Length: 407
Ligand SMILES: *[C@@H]1O[C@H](CO)[C@@H](O)[C@H](O)[C@H]1NC(C)=O
Ligand SMILES: *[C@@H]1O[C@H](CO)[C@@H](O)[C@H](O)[C@H]1NC(C)=O
Ligand SMILES: *[C@@H]1O[C@H](CO)[C@@H](O)[C@H](O)[C@H]1NC(C)=O
Ligand SMILES: *[C@@H]1O[C@H](CO)[C@@H](O)[C@H](O)[C@H]1NC(C)=O
Ligand SMILES: *[C@@H]1O[C@H](CO)[C@@H](O)[C@H](O)[C@H]1NC(C)=O
Image (cartoon, rainbow, N blue to C red; front, side):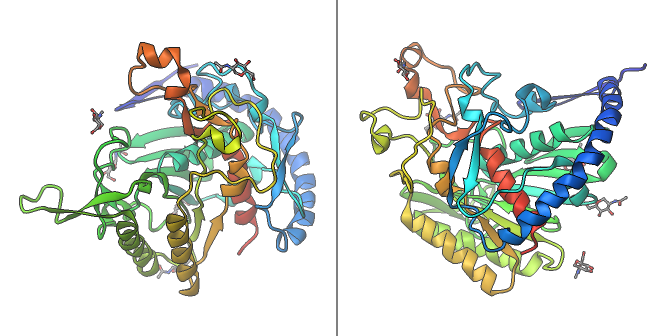
């Protein structure tokens, strides 16, 4: 068997597609295929039943139930692309406790339909899905890649990184699942998918989105998020281009910059998106767990070393920005009134409970860890991004439910 290897390398990404391996898996896939055909019909039935109750059920209100039979939905080592997924695989980075992978989200009034990867790729045949946003959005995309990868018999699949876009292509279905890096949606100096700097000065071009949007306006499904990068009191706004010699920078309040940027974004959607073709989803704020005192730890502690969810019903941390939340909500409602099909995937409350599921110290480290940090790991724990498999899989189960239930 001829084995051709193709190595595609961009900054920070090293992607290897081995055709030989793919063929081996393909044979396995044929056997799996038989199982899937029989399983699919039963799943559909279950789904049919769930669907009727889904329309009246609030999927976002519920509780976490420990379920080590059905969860995780895939195993880390069954996801062929895990090595490329930007360090969200905590197991690979040394996390030993795995309880965080075994929780199921149980809405109060109905069951969430089980994610059926086969049904999903069928649904997405000849379609393009684009997740647009920041690292949380990339987290969700990575989870989607693994959910599909591990549940479909793999014909030729490939992962291609090109600039701000990274694509999982499922060739046999002509399906693309993409992530487009744009943490502010509009143009900014943090648009490089790898070389951006959260702590440095942020400069935005609040009226400019075309450079990004031309890559995704004709997608069939768009899944947006934006939040984390706005969490600072002021930002700089650039009038003119980054290259222009006469560029003028002005410091403005965050909410003002957000307001203009969201207008730019929603105007773009309103005028450029085909309403019959494109479904739009907006993923709400992903909570952070940086202040342990919010759930009874001593001050200075954070998500580091947490292994259990929070069980207090309605728990709400102290790390949100009500002004930001409100402005996002207003923008989405305005788009709805203007006839765009846009649905919010409200991940906020359910993720608030999951202080145990962040990548913490089990993440690819971009900067060198100093000796002081090593001695006190909580100082470099990431309490923003999430382990995969884990909470982002549930976000995708919610997205799945909405994709199947036309809204
Ligand atoms: C593949 O999907 C794209 C949309 O993502 C569509 O425009 C194109 O026609 C499809 N190609 C084939 C051969 O069906
Ligand atoms: C990368 O994207 C650019 C612009 O969208 C395109 O012209 C180029 O062909 C792409 N390269 C690859 C290798 O796909
Ligand atoms: C990020 O910004 C901070 C503060 O401006 C600076 O100290 C640091 O060197 C920057 N890092 C990179 C990689 O640019
Ligand atoms: C919008 O999408 C529908 C369904 O794909 C298509 O039939 C229609 O021609 C599109 N309209 C425009 C203006 O492109
Ligand atoms: C982590 O938590 C356990 C109890 O859950 C505790 O015994 C241990 O000391 C903690 N480790 C650190 C470094 O805080």
